[in-house]
Image (cartoon, rainbow, N blue to C red; front, side, top):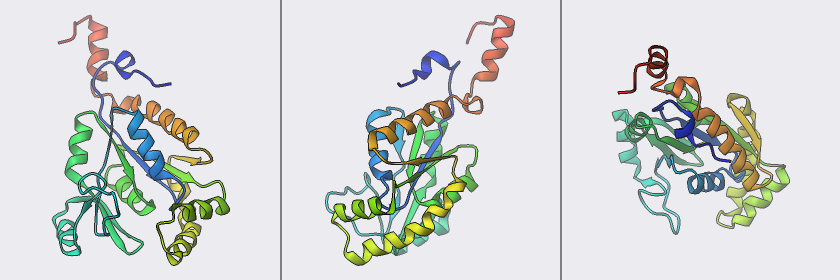
Length: 220
């Protein structure tokens, strides 16, 4: 069930940063895509990356693809909220579009690993809501990685080896979910999102609303 925020909140709210992390193959990208289909107020943070573009990916939609020189320059300029090297390539979150979206009351979705989540939490702790997604089992994770059939065998083995370290970071997150079935996991994330949107700290007009309520002053 979707909460109609306009019916229950007193006025404007600040957007939030919904951070999804998981071991590779656990399903965070599928969850993110489904959330974007269902949540009109949610926008995707488009990361900058140095990795090669995969078939079907669109520059500026899936990622912004740059070379190593440009990425290094953006780091030096302070243009990223977070950046990390993952599987031999660098990824970063541009700062300006995120700050603009939050100020306008829009929520921003992040598909990042634990390193990126840690940096986002450090820089903007009041705005982040973090969800860590676990696979049901190691066997199921391996099955999903092989079913994708887009990575060579050595990459699959590397991702499985990394999983053992990745899952140790679950305690850093606000919420932890096991992705046994996509739609059930998406429903759980939507419930988290609905509750976090209504947090008192994110309601920009709450103090003014209460003051007007006490005095009987009509809204401006």
